[in-house]
Picture (tube, helix red, strand yellow):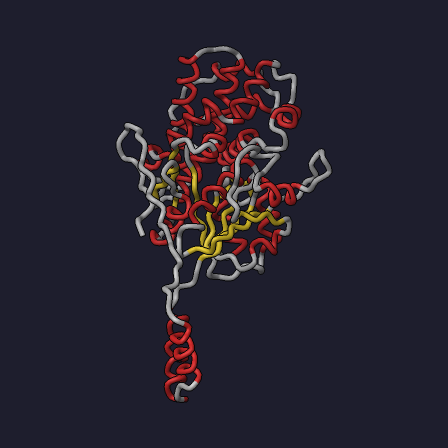
Length: 415
């Protein structure tokens, strides 16, 4: 079978031809009934030694057959539903995967009184978080978290980062050691001992290896099958990374592996803070030059913060889809930018909680909480002076500074 399409290395975007579908025909030749009678009678009268040999061959064939991978998506919001759609389109055609993709749904009751899970399973569509998009008939929604992951050996985590510690606690002790995980979650936990990336939280609490997938991925555009890229970050096992690449890749969604989990994950996490700053600029109608300057300063602080936390982070990671591309698309069209723009237009008088509830219909902002977590790390380590943009974003979010302060911070090069 042909390998999935690989990342387009040229800066020019062009359409990739879809692989032709394989047509499988199941036809039986026409034989007289006497043929089948002779075959059946000869089988029933087979000598004991021959029967035992045949059974042995069958058993060995079964044992030699590779185990099929079973996938569960933990999360069913906007991005989680798109991830399930991508995965389901591949599991149904790849022989190494079970067709069915289970998707854990945090159960909600819709205004009609119908349960969200029932609506997804009946209409093959997440009517609340991804309306109008068919997920694939092999996607099955399940409101029971433990039941949803039972039997799965590939777990895809895609929930708001602030919920992950609770989810991991519920799954602790219920997952076998041969399970592989991948996190599509942008954020981190800040603990007394320091920041903890979500991939490490998964590994520490569940005892499984976790890769990450980040990139310039506005979910609604991918749902409409518009061309996009993403980056899988892995630690040591490239074979596992290639399996994730195979699971997510389509003709319109190109995925590349990079051996830099922390770099890939921090890019996906920190760009939301810069997107908040970009939203302030838009809300104050400061123009494109100012926005470009904020994005440049933001990228510089992203790189410096990442390398100060993890010396293993590679410079080249910031030029992957998870880096500069994700920063650009999030500052142009993401939900963090959108809500921050509304915040600035109100002069900071409307809270982010109020705007989130009004504008996102149940989805969660990541940038505001991440800005708070980053600020805590900077303050604890005495790094605030080196990250004026990150510090200013948090102080505007909590009302200490007005939105206009986003361009009033001093320029310092992080050391």
